[in-house]
Length: 332
Image 1 (spheres, rainbow, N blue to C red):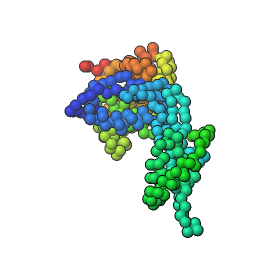
Image 2 (image 1 turned 135 degrees about the horizontal axis):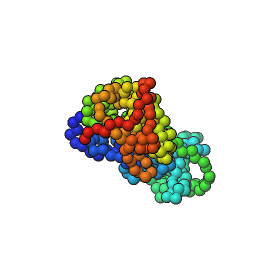
Image 3 (image 1 turned 180 degrees about the vertical axis):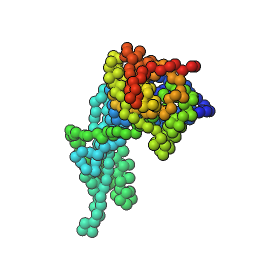
Image 4 (image 1 turned 90 degrees about the vertical axis):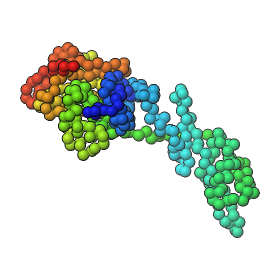
């Protein structure tokens, strides 16, 4: 949301890949595209978030659930017991796996008693799938050590083929799956920025905090000191009181905080962040509905008051004063 976006597009407050179901329309199209790569994607790929996506089968824009193992086995892996050899793991639709050797032909050469010798090294292994390609692969391997004579190439290749033996073995392979523990902060800040505009209106876009948040989202790391993060309340307990599953529900809540306004955002049971969105709340007339609830598995979202959510007013201590969270509805 720029102050004057040239082109607008729809935007999910919580990204689609984490079950987001609430959209707003006033989003700069260029920024939306850029931040999809630099904010939304790292948030969705952060380890704790990704684990919830897998557990709850939350599909992204491409219609797929994350599968970090599938990503990891796209490339050959080192053989666990045979140094210099590689293996490939193939996984069937039913989840069963097979492990195959990756074809590798390697020769070594030397001179003994005045005669040149050439032989395949112990790293040489041929996948049966590649049997027909052995002559071509052998020729290429011989060229690497300077053997170009066609008669020698054919003779060495023939000897290799005749010496091949079939071996089957059972091995255990550890698949390295990356654990992306960070990188989600920008995605959380993006959610806070969009919600602050939703609940505080266009006037908030001129707020110093809004300007600082825009600079951070645009890649200016020097602006990070201009945005205050605060310890936030445990919204998981509120979800339990409301009869909602705190593991599958996102919630955001705008509330007073020591004379300022704080947006608290909770994703699943993975991350909670409190962002001070303005130091001068008196400038804004607020919506009554200052809570956003997003059921990720049902892909349903709604706004409400805290009293509507839990059936009773929630009182927050604001700098020593007890204040009700219910705010006035902003004029449309």
